[in-house]
Amino acid sequence: GTINIQHIIITTMMIAATTISRMASSQAPKVLRLRLAGNSTSQIKNNNYMKRYFSDKTKEAANTTAKESTSSSTTATTTAAKEEAKKTTWWNNTAWWGTAGAMAGWGMSGAAIYDALESSPELISLNMTGVLLVYSSLFARWAFVVKPQNLLLAGCHITNVGAQMNQLRRAVEYKKENGKDDEVDDIMKKAGATAAAGAACVLGGPMVQSALVNANLGFVSSIAAAEAGPFTVHFWAPMSKWMISGASFMELDRPTEKISLAQYTALTMTGFFFSRYALLVAPINYTLCSVNIALFGSSAWHLGRKIKADFLS
Image (cartoon, rainbow, N blue to C red; front, side):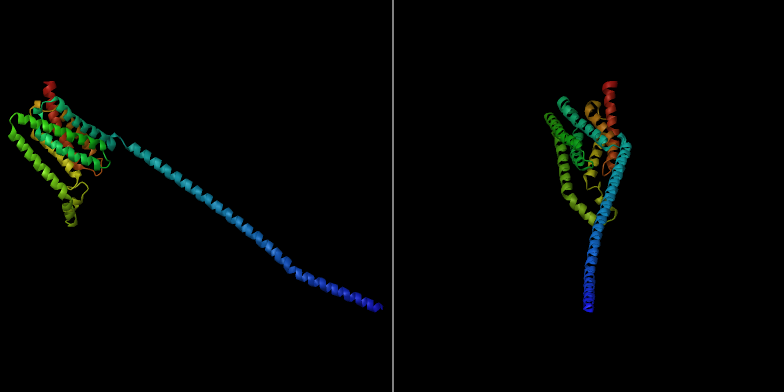
């Protein structure tokens, strides 16, 4: 009986040990898997944190670089503006010369209006009046298209067209009243021919220019395509001013009592201011510069004679 009891106890202990061993074996992978899973979740969280951290640092660095770049750009722009301001003086200030030239032009318009109110029509030069009509018509257009645009100048020339038309009317009426119909007819024929030629140039000019440019004629095609070439108002406006200078040069011995002090003062000032202004606009206009030098000289000659005769003699 004793052997059987011992045998039973030993067998039971062996079975228990075996059972515990199997249970331990079956639980070990689960614990390992839980640990691995825990480690994996923690690693993912760490990785996400590091990604966010480095992303934030990258954005911060980019923002800092952008701010520094903007600051440098602003500083450079401000410095350039200051340097440009230092370089800009009255001598190379386009707005100053343009305004001064426009004011001189307004003086010319005012002179015509003043002469219409105060001066006798016998003092009106039909040649000069006709030239001034063409001149102001062209320069009204030039002032509108030149860079920078000069609306003050355009306005003064439009006003001058009206004023010179009134002067022409007064002169024609005076000559007719005094039996000078032949002289009036001659002036009207010249005016009609000038108007017809001008209309033909305006209408046919673009076609002729296009043909010359497309013909590839070398220098001729280059001249035709030029910004201030003969098919643009940048060329013809100065040429009309040559007519004013020419009219002045043709009448260098004109009696001083027939010289308008107001008109020739305005023309002299116009020639002076535009000699410089022509070199500051775009496109640069050397023709305009040269004609204004000539206009200044011829008008100053007549003005000097007038002042001498009226105030110094």
